[in-house]
Amino acid sequence: MAEVPMDHGLLLAGALFALGLAGVLARRNAVFMLMSLEIMLNAAGIAFVVAGARWAQPDGQIMFILILALAAAEVAVGLALVLQLYHRLGTLDSDAASGMRE
Amino acid sequence: MEATFYISALLALAATFRVVTAANAVHALLYLVVSLLAAALVLFTLGAPFAAALEVIIYAGAIVVLFVFVVMMLNLGEEAEAQERRWLSPGVWRGPGLLAGILLAELLLLLTGALPGTAGTMVAPKAVGVALYGPYLLAVELGAFLLLAGLVGAFHLGRQEALEGNEDG
Image (cartoon, rainbow over all chains, first blue to last red):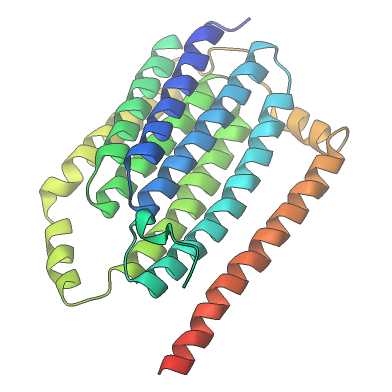
């Protein structure tokens, strides 16, 4: 029985997720969009840990570990793509990469 | 202690807001570190010390360092030095430093025992490890596949750029 209500933990996770979503939608800089994606993944992990703490089961933390692995792989590929974008187009503006041709 | 949770949660929200609204990538990264450390303290107060340690080591350590490397690689140029000088001014560090100081005070109070540690039932790292390599073994293998694919993909993308650079030069 946790002293902190589960609602408050989920509220924190939801607010963090909303902030990250706003960042992805509002920013055009690819580095900032990647950072906002990390924030959203982190918020999802917090929600899992909150739920795991509510029932005192380790499953929430295991999902958190898997999300960490996902975030690490995603950020490696994403940052390589950012480098390619900057190298080819000379800018970090994600709108500049909207055309699928060279 | 409940107050620890709420202070850390508010700090995480404030720092995350500054990440999303910052104009400078390095400022955003500083606030991102503070946000992730606050999230780690939230996880600790929820009774998940293993997840909190992983948050600090992998998110605030490895992933943000990757971001810093890329920002350093992208900002090469003659105006980079002037920017660097402006980044090193004390005003830049005041916001993240203040938030991190509150987190440090909270952590010190926790460590000295002035505040009770966890607000909920603690799920020990041993339970997590036993479950991770028991019923979740297949998920661990899939995670290993994912990391290998990420490694190969990142290497391929970075390698192509290096080859093209050689052809251009």
